[in-house]
Length: 136
Image 1: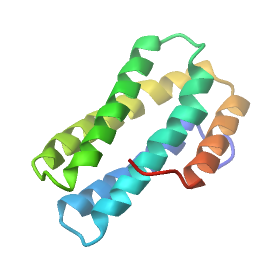
Image 2 (image 1 turned 60 degrees about the vertical axis):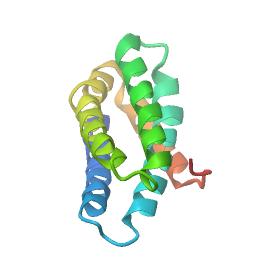
Image 3 (image 1 turned 45 degrees about the horizontal axis):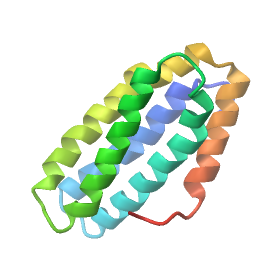
């Protein structure tokens, strides 16, 4: 993707997450496990590749909010299979979370980081996302 901004690359990744969420909401067979696995890997890779790198930068408030949302989403995923009422809460928060990252957090990183830093972060994100991690 060359010198494409980090926000653009992550928006594409978030689009994939929203598609998985949509499949789950529509009741597509096998969609819950795929959503759970992908969301778990996505959040973990994001935290390790992007947020740890960024933690010495300016806006800790937005970073704290994002990390709290990740934790809440993980909690929803761990109970959603047994309690279908949690799915609506998960859907609402997931959409709010992606909106926060796409409209505020990643554009902020675009401004604060060089193109080389953005590229390294995204490469690390993709590497970590591809790693197998234990699901919640």
